[in-house]
Length: 290
Length: 290
Image (cartoon, rainbow over all chains, first blue to last red; front, top):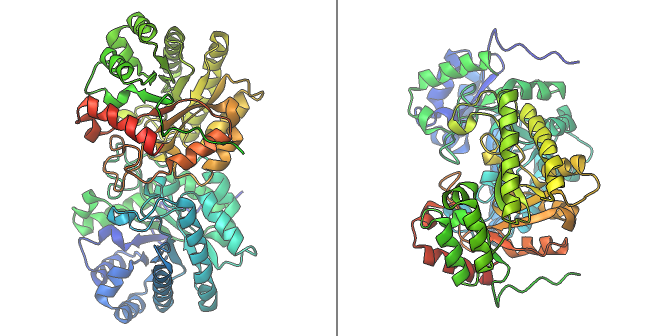
C-alpha cells in the first residue's frame, strides 16, 4: 500500500507547462514569475525557448534554481514522402539536443498523424500507415536518445485529436509501442500521462499499473469542462471539471511515479486572465484538488 | 475470404438516421421523401416519433414498405438516486415497447454518463460509479428485451462525449459488457458501430472481428472533418473527412455483418441545406465512398 504524497501543504511538486501563460508573458518572465512563487519546475515549448534563446534560458534556469519536468516537444513524424520523414527526424534530433542543454528529464513526443490534416488538407486517410511511420520515427529517434541519455515520453492524445496531432490515442497503444521498441524497460522510452487526454479511458488504472515507474516519465493535469466548447483551447483549471485528478494521481504513485504534477492548460479563458492570477490559481488548486 | 457487397450500383442497403434531416422535415415527410428515392430503411428518434404519433408512423412504414435499421434510443441509465435509476429503467421499457411496435431490429443504447453533466452541472465525477450503473441498467433492461425479442445495441460514443452522453467509449468496452451480460452470444445484446465514434481506435479492426455477426447489430456512417469545429454538431458527409469508411465496412462484412449502412449526420451545415440535397447527397456518397 503506497501512501500518496500530501500536496495540501506546499507546492514543491508543482510544475507549470509554459503554454499555460504563453499569451501573457515571454518565457524569461514566466521563469521569473514561477521562481518568485516557489514553483521550482517548468516545462517549456520550443517556440518559447527559441524566442528567448536556448543558452540564455539555460543560464536563467541555473540562476533561479528552476528545473524542467519535461521538454515540449518532439514528434510529428508522418510525412508525405521520404524527404519529409527525414526532415521530421532531423528536427527531432535538434529537439533532443535542446532537451539535453536544458537538462530536461524527458523529451515529450506528440507523435503526429495524417500529414496536412493540421492545415485542413489531409494528404491521405491511411491511419495504419501513419501509425507505422510513427513507430519507425520513434525507433530512429530512440537510437540517438539512448546515446544522449534523454528519455522519450510518448504522449497519447485524446481521440478527438487523432486526425491532426497524434495517432497514438490511448495509454495502452503507447505502451504497446514502448514494449516493442524498448522491451527491457530500460527507462529510455516511456509515456507522458496527460489526464486531459486519457481521463475517459476505462483501462486507465490498469494501464498506469502496467507502465510502472520505468515508463511513467511525466504527469500532466488540467480538467475537462462540461460543456467543452472547443476541441483544442477549452481546457479547464483543476477542480473546474469532471476529472478525478487525485484518484488518478493515486494510481500514478501506486505505480511508482514520484515526479512533478505539471499543469498544462490551453484555454482562451485562462489566456485572457492576468498571468499572476493564473499562477496563483494553479498553486491553490494544486494544493486543494491535485 | 469475404467479398464485400457492391454499393456502387444501388442503394438498397442505405438507411437514413432521421436526425440527419430533423431540422428540415417532420418525420412523416422524411419517410415519404426516403420512400420516393428508393431509400427503404430509416432509423428514427423517439422525439420525432412522438411528434407524428407511434401508430401513425407504424401505418406509414407499412404503407410505404419502409423498415427500420434501428430505433434511437434507450439508455441514459445513471442518476443521482434510486428513484432516478428507476425512472430511467421505466423509460427504457417504453422505448422497448415502441421499438417492438415499429418492428425495429434493435434498440440503440446511448448509455449515459455523469448525471447532470449534459446540463453543465455534473452531480459527481465518479466514472466508475456510472459505469457500474450502466452495466446494471443494461442488465435490467435486457431481461425485458429478451422477453420482447428486441435486441439491445450498445453504442460506444466518442471519448469527447464521455462526461455527458456515454461512459462506454470503445468497442472493446462495449463488448466486455456484452460478454458479461450475454455470455452465450444469444443475439439479445450487441453493439451499434458508429464510425464517427470509433474510427480513431487502434483496436477497431480487432474488436469488430471479436464481435462477430451475433453482436454487430448496426453500422452508422458519416465522416470526421478536419478541422472539427464543434464536439457535437460538426459531423461530415461521407467522403468529406478522413474516415476510411470502406475499409471499416470491409471489416464489418468480414465479421458477418450484412445489414444497412445508416447515415447519421449531426451537422449545422447539413441541417442548413435543403432536405432534398441532403438525401440526394447521401445516396451519391453511399454509392461512391461507403
